[in-house]
Length: 206
View 1: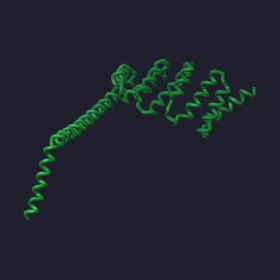
View 2: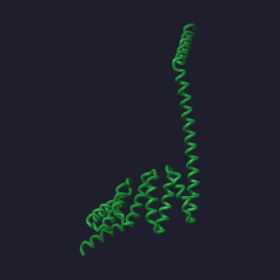
View 3: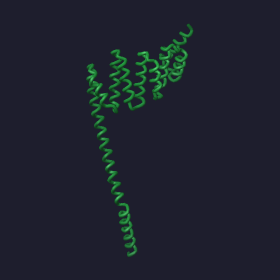
View 4: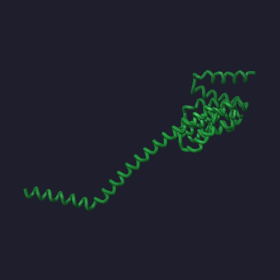
């Protein structure tokens, strides 16, 4: 019995010593941990609230854009530089500008969309659309530079096809043929691409 008591006493003393040596650090660590948890929850709640607010503002801006009122949409883009909703708003502004024949504005908005996208796939869509606008503007070197910056591999065939279109416009049939052929290897079912390649061969035989 005495031996058991002695052992318990030793255990209690060991615990006391451990808390004396380490208690402050443990408590401090717990406070920091709980504070970090609270801070993360606060940050996450704030982030969700910010996204919800941005979503509401985006919907309001798009409603105004449907009425051909552009100021609210443009303000939304400029006021939300780090929000993907701004990229979506820029897409819509670019679409309307292109439909109205304002290619300079369409290009400017697509550049903003690419910068604000935050996701490679969305940025790639913006760059491909921008390249199409630049081709219409006959800004061929700019279009090639834009296409070369597309990172998403799923767009590789389309990028090559558009590069071929640029080379055709620049009267560079050999480079166009090379681009179209490589694009067709990646997308064999593209009938429009086959037609473009066939047209090149017909022109070469004339």
